[in-house]
Length: 266
Image 1 (cartoon, rainbow, N blue to C red):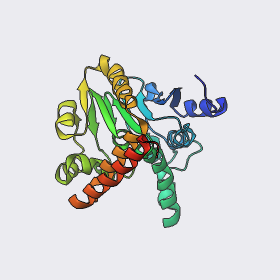
Image 2: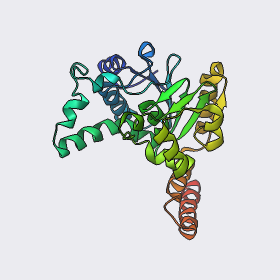
Image 3: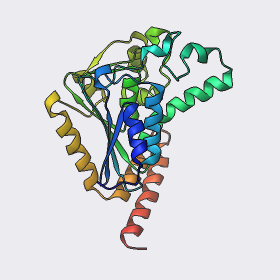
């Protein structure tokens, strides 16, 4: 494996609970703190955001996976305590900050979740066990989801008196519709594999011992098509919800014209 990413950065990311492996056009991002069920912290979010910025331009597919029995049990609850996490600003302290400071802090957390849907790559989450709160939202940050049959999605923020604020509300609503999204968030109930596939939250569910292979197979299939065609298709589909039928037709024509000229070397 050849990469320009400094070893010091990789070490810091792993200490925060995230590992990056590059395999040609595939980047594999692994949550690697299974003893804590991959509970998320600001340090983990900074690592994820830094990985997004550091990915080589040659990467076409990003695969997100997690070690252990749980994808991510959500936010480290220490963030809610007066003691907090050493070296981090706890939520009780954040609540006392100015509106601008609070907005800036939450925006910085969101950076860990935004890059997965950028135009130049396709992201796949391989999700097993519990994907709760921030864990659910991290899975939703990806374009596609392959889940184990034991998966349990849950959006617990509302039950704690909060709201989902790590970019999960938009993709959740796009996938399952407003009414079901509201019900899932407001009740905090668990969504299993069968419902996840039936409602579009997941592309496919497989036995837990087949999850890694199924995710790799999907990544390989995504890499088999020409990169420019995948990028154009992703852009068409991402923008479809905001266009009328005729506007989408026009967007298709424009995209196809670019592809034809590119293929013809013009």
